[in-house]
Amino acid sequence: MIWKCPNCNEPLQQDNRQLKCSNNHSFDIAKQGYTNLLLDNQKKSKNPGDNDEMLEARQRFLQAGFYDPLIKAIQPYIKPNHTIIDLGCGEGYYLRQLLTQEPDAKGYGIDIAKTGVKKAAQQSKALQPYIAYAVGSTYRAPVIDHSCDVAISIFAPFDEQDVQRILKDEGLLIRVGPATKHHQEIKEKLYQNAEEFKPAAIPEGFQITHQEELLYEIELSGKALTEDLIPMTPFHWQGSQEAKAALAALSSQKITVHFQVDVLSAVPKSV
Ligand SMILES: [Zn+2]
Image 1 (cartoon, rainbow, N blue to C red):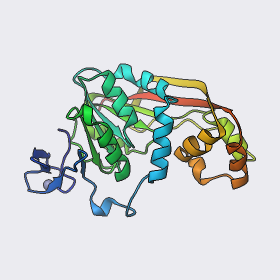
Image 2: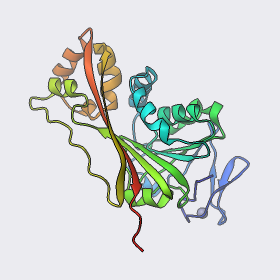
Image 3: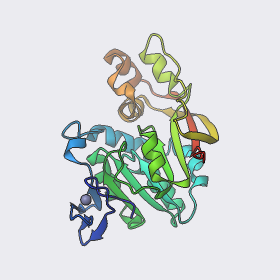
């Protein structure tokens, strides 16, 4: 197990239905199989993260397979006996798919939103104990130093120094974000002056091992677009209601998907 105590940083061990550290801090394992390792002082709100409606939208969209090319792009980096951490795992779709393809790896998912983690654990019962989920900070992950072979961040924020801390020496960070044309049709319809996404900078302390862009089109009904895809994106909070109603009325709409996949390794420390 790679989880550590968020109070004192000692490793956690399972003791019946609890995880405990050597200083006797204990955390209950919920019946769905996840553990809450988020301290009250790390919460910014009572229920931080995505809300239920957004999670359900995300789940419908992902389970329809629209983003599965992303799984194909990440899969080659997941080897047997690897320990994988998904930072900002949401309801665990990607981690579950990756582990199903490579059942000899171990997967850990972490997210600040309890509703997502709960769903993730519920849906991963068949993969337990090779997959485990915790509610926790993705900036100060409750994860033991140098315990992970691969850290994955798909459209999720992270702290680069913390990721360096949890990765093994030869470990990889796989970061996925929007490339220039991602969802351009939605932007064009919601904004007067739609700007392209700018590629994110390489995080400090990392170097590029491999870079890849995935560019393809998906076709959605107006309903799926406004009820499933848009609630997964920042567009959920933006754009006029009229523009969204016009999108909802479309019988079908082509949407460009453009991912930037960065496979990064830590820059070796100079001796
Ligand atoms: Zn402790």
